[in-house]
Length: 103
Image (tube, rainbow, N blue to C red; front, side):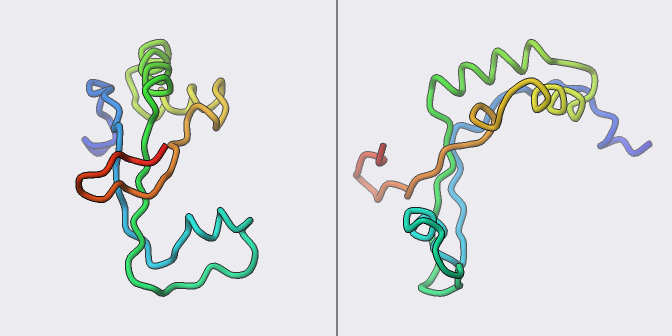
């Protein structure tokens, strides 16, 4: 078995926030009720994926509760018992320099 697949769960830190760039304006499309096709264009569109503090705290406790030798098993068990509401990140447009992030 490859070493990378046989790792134990040592690092259970959550990523609080991550900004990714998309070729389509996904957030506007979702806000518009997902009507029509999602077409590329208009330059890079940034989306911040984040965990609110209460969700981060909840997930950290569940990671400890469902911890096993295998990281995939831990995540599989969490997905089995928790709904997507708890497992999926929230999204927003990233804050511009010097601005507070939108809520």
